[in-house]
Length: 279
Image (cartoon, rainbow, N blue to C red):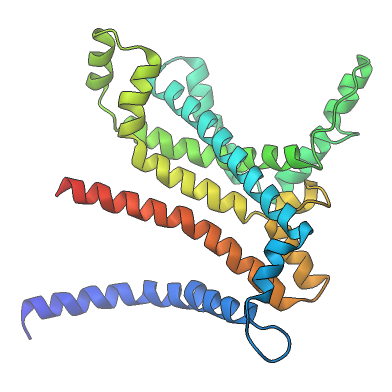
């Protein structure tokens, strides 16, 4: 057996365990969910479950609500995370050191605990409401609707996104930034022409993680979301457990997978084009 053949077999053997896990945990369940979602309850297969998603007013509201919350959260997370990452990259001092030591803390707090913490803080009878009541101020409704879900998702996603972007910005040579400043480049131009293009790949990775995490979230929307409209994850759970409609729940799950696949395909295409440009 030649050396090249042995290397090929070794490489294949190293890849097979990962592929087997991917096949068992992801690919096969997706195929099973899709087949189940095509069942019409009469022994046949059709697209009636998917037609329901786009014709039922309640499901239409859930889809629009999910996409709106996801879009707002993605924009807010990216803006805040980029701001923090840039501030930590190009500044020094005690405030920067404090941010660096504390911004990762939310990652180590379980989602259920964090959600109940938000309820105790921002609820109608929470800490903030009681403190403002002393001053005669009534706290407006913050949670148990769209705003509460967005706030919770900001808490969950900003630390990890900031960590990714900080890592990308640390790889930008300081000489590039200093040279741009020397020729009079403004802050906005510096970001759009230098910082953002040089961190674009990491930006796509961060955006993909946030999008998929929010669109498939369940804990926060279930605990502090409104009864209607609902995020798709909560809607799927109710359809499955309350109404016992497994086929319809499978259709919602597969539709959510398709939504995530759109951004995933865009990310893969962008990375492929970038690699092709390097050749």
